[in-house]
Length: 444
Image (cartoon, rainbow, N blue to C red; front, side):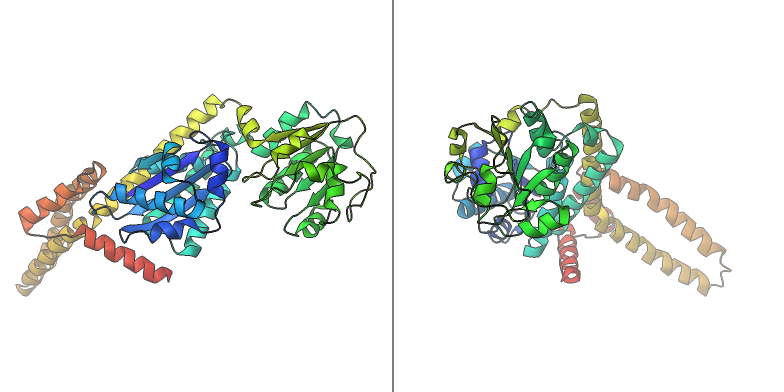
């Protein structure tokens, strides 16, 4: 049984999402260790959502309640956010609905900016992290791999990706009304991750060229050399910040990397950015704009009180997110729903597969016995051919019916019929457990 606890920009405040994102302890291993009936866990954490996907042992009584307890307890222990507060600002999705939800998330349909592309990579990285921690399960592997496939189908078959804009580009669109000439702008980029690269590309698309980067983790020089921009080390960072017209922060630091004291202290002309273009002060008379794309917040809110400084953060960006491109979104949701339906159907068919195999094995055992008997009587092969053809025809209908019942969630009815009519006993749960162990052995 699949379960998802989801807190997102639709259900929770950015303050809560920020608190959920601060956790030195990996949460998926805590969930997986909560109870032996937890088969696996994957956690997706982005600036707009925090989600725990849990695979539970289906036969366990009240599996959903146990899975929910495992997720809530682990999140509370790792983040310090009370379970009651998480519960009040999240939704719980279970069963077949989990696939459609994750496929929608991975495709950008649930993002602040519908169609944004960053989320697909974040979903893939969540699975990679779970693999590293050893907390995946065969069903979670299948779920997340199909989510990536669904995302690619949506991207290739609809205009959603072209219509949707990333948070980076949306934030720059919002800033554009205050910027008369991007080419004259002095820009400081704080951070060197994937968002930083996307931000740099978006800035250059708008004509910005005077760009300096600072990395709190010390990777600024490498990033600067790779992209051909200036860089500011720790000593030059305050001066570079005070001399900038536009500051964009996008780091994973769990503390503020910019505050009012840094912007207001000292002389704007003191120090210099290593390798940065020389410019004594920011453009006279212009207001400085600070864009905070980090979660947890990279910028202390007190920056908004610095004279001639405006602060644009994720919560403000969300308010200004554009309406969905209805036609592209409808087409994308149809693709996601179809992919989710196929995911569920395939899963149901896998549950009835051991029963189908058992029936075929039983029938073919009888067939071979009859063929051996015919050969013993001197058959020239025509009887064998006829028997094989007959068995093939006879097995077609019960095999087809097995898949139909599985898709209706009635695999148990097929198993019961085999036992009643042929005394064939099939333990689906044991087969699934052996399959899980076999895959684990191969993975190890």
